[in-house]
Amino acid sequence: MNRTGRLGRLLPALSVPRGLRARLVVAFLLVAAVSALTTAGLTYREARNAILQRSQDGAVNDLRAQVNSLAPELAVPPSQSDLDFFRVQLERSGKSRDWDITVHYNGVPDSDQGGLRREMAVPTDFKNSVEKRRVPVFQRIDRDGDPWLLIGMPVRQSDGAASALTVYAQLPLSAEEANVEALVSAARGGALPAFALAVILPLVAARGVLRPVRGLRQAAGRIAEGKLDTRLEVKGADELADLSRTFNDMAARLEESMAELRRMEANSRRFAADVSHELRTPLAAMAAVTDVLDEDADSLDPDTASAVRLISQETGKLVRMVEDLMEVSRFDAGAAALHLDEVDVAETIRKTLQARAWQQRVAAELPADVRARLDPRRLDVVVANLVGNALHHGGEPVRVVLHAPEPGAGRLLIEIRDSGPGIAPEVLPHVFDRFYKADSARARSEGSGLGLAIAQENVRLHGGTLRAANSPDGGAVFTVELPVRPAPVRDDAAPDDAAPGGGTPDGSPGADRPTAGGSPAGGARADTAPDGAQDDQADGPAGERPAGGKENDTA
Image 1: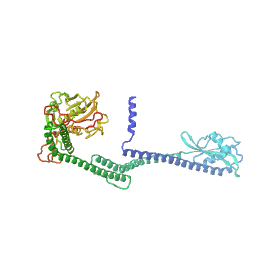
Image 2: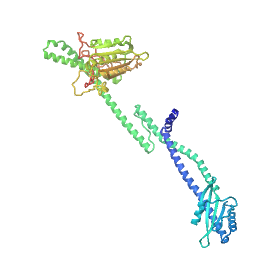
Image 3: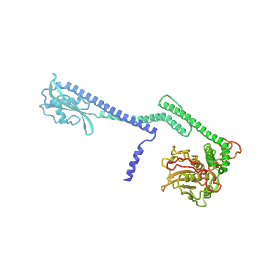
């Protein structure tokens, strides 16, 4: 029963033709088969009727002619011997028709003698119909599987009045049936070439239709691969040619649109890089001035000291934003490169927390002897961004958990968990977008809005992934997945501190980066206050993340 059920499920699937070519062939075959069967059926019926009608008309006319020739010689009223002699004459005259005759005359008993060749039995209902209607009647009957024609013909007198004499004849239709069978055999023999032609024609038609369709599919595939200069060759003036022209117009407009988008994107990237380069030199000078003013702030009156500190703080934010924009420009230009080294991952994370005086605020679970080939500076950027983000916009305590890779897995996990309200579901898809704000009406934050985006780019550069989610126990969870052995980096990658436009980031050969309030090139900064206390306004890469209604504004 199970086997029957499986066959029942397989047969419908096998019966459905797949592909346009198969459907065209099947459709042509179905149309040809239905048309051929319909035509053959109608032709067979009409030909059979025509053959039999011609045969029975000829037999009726021959019998009427013989009766009209011999009936005047019959005595009236005839005796039984006269009727038998009349019957024998009719049978002898119809040897070519091979008919059998019986004669009936009202008032004279029917003779017991049969025909010269075969016994003849006239059905009672047929005889009653002839006697009652007094008109010639014929009927095709079947006897022992053979077709016969039965004729009943009343004889009229010379004045046209009905007489008491009726002649019945039967003759075989074997010859006519043989003609019909020959016709069927000929039709059956011609069906094979017709079906072969019905297969060839759709194949030729399908080839003509499928060739441009196949070309269209291949061209669409090349367009999907980014080859926007792909075009189709237009042949003819039919619907397929119109489709090819429409496709070419679409591809041309798409190519123009993409070229314009690329030009605008390149301009915007160049603008951001150029602005960042131009701002670095004056910002370096401003940062140096604010450092001097900070040292003398305590000797100034309170209002002036407050203004000096505000200027110093905003200058530091501007320096960090310029550094982040420079880093983003490197990623966009493909100039960011990895400097891989064999590192102790737990020790690297521990140094990141120590450099920012976060040991008391962050609980770390760092198993020993977890080694990987990573870029330590970029790993510092990633951890600093995510931990600072959790401290500023999540909730303490914050936990950093390092998961050693499983044997043979080749990938390690770093989780940063906070105890805050978590991230709103509608914000989750956008946490790594640049300058994303969950609430556009809120005040400006201290971050640049690029920290999480930079962290994600650094993880991707290693061939890893960075995911954000909400923990079932509350709070947000950022998961970093890194390969223990990243793929080899291409040798022609530009150095990390190279600006996309060439030269050093500030546009001058050998120029040092601003150090006052600034950060390393990766957007991370090991800035602690002189007395070892944390400077909350200068956490380097630590920025904001949207918790509830907050924006993704990371430093």
